[in-house]
Length: 365
Ligand code: DAH
Image (cartoon, rainbow, N blue to C red; front, top):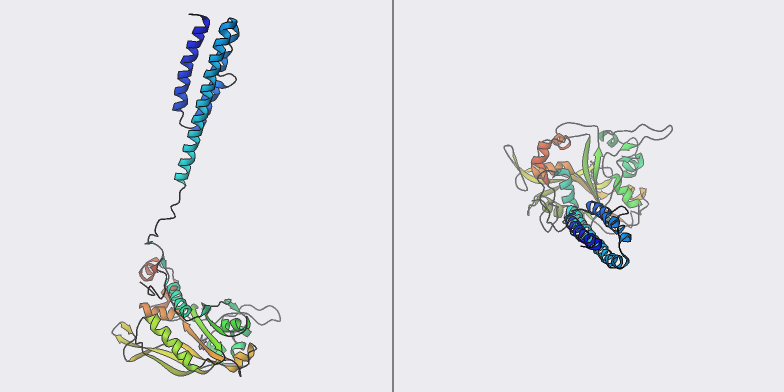
């Protein structure tokens, strides 16, 4: 065997060994080590090449060509392996980070929707279906919006009845208040643009009061419809429609009882029929009555406060306690529990997170 032959045998053995190592490299980092060990400046192939000058010229040429071919095959194998490993790594990462957005929603059995949120959504769904939009106002109101513009002047006894929370006043300024009702949103809605108006405004309200049926923070929804010819019949029809849809009782008994509010004239309170059987309360039928809201034709002075002419525009308003109708509809006895964040209570009275109320699907399931 010539020197060249033994050198070539050695190279062939090395090629097999390296090919095995390349095939065995499971990640790009290992493959890089194989590459450096073979083709790097101090790599084994490079070192074998250093043996070439010692050969006779004819053999050197033959062996050189063969070596180069081996080196190229190794380099090509490494490159191919590199591509394959890279693809596999990208593949694995995509698989690990995949989000299957096609999965159908699974009902959660943990979080529930609070009855106030649920009932607010139900009320919005019903009025949205009648063409109302939702309006909002701030929890911290000024005296004008909460009282004066609603025809409750400074000495008016209704101010006392509201048990108002006052904020500390800036020197020389009137104190701001935590809004005692959602009625100030009527004023804001009317000042925001020209009539007609057809809005509801659900939100938080505040009064200094606390017992089984009163909490310092509670929720109301306000309604306002102003146009050129909106009359008391429209008010009645609208609220009857609401009552039937909300309590899901087709022949809901309802009565409009004369009342008084400074911001409406005439004013009425609305009762729904009910029957009390022991501890049970049945809504809709029966001889008893339950008050659910206040309403009336918007007082001309309120319209004047927002720059509307009572000779050309008129309409109705109503205000309803959301917590109260939630208690009635879902048989929840104590209002205070609404705001105690007791998980057991929330699991019992809460609603499935994905059952969004809508008229087509039924309000609550
Ligand atoms: N703001 C009244 C309250 O909190 C409720 C109310 C009564 C609102 C009659 C109205 C209405 O819009 O017309 O007691």
